Image (cartoon, rainbow, N blue to C red):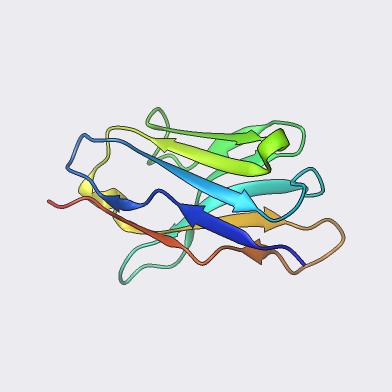
Length: 117
């Protein structure tokens, strides 16, 4: 059993920056990949960024060049640095961990990011 706890959300003006953290209760090395998803009002949850155990990353087109996903294995923590924030980035952001050999991913509780128009 693993807990993922996000932190760092809040309200930021357009053009501002936030860094979200996702602290895991155990080693994140076990996961095939970890990522950040978001869900905005009236929209489905979408992938924002993902990093594999091997270090490969990918990003949604809408955040490329603005967001950077990273991890600190020693601290069992996943991060996403979000720069040049836009109102369209307003959403609840969720930390995700992909379990090898299982269909049941781990999810955090979410943290709200609000960028007003």
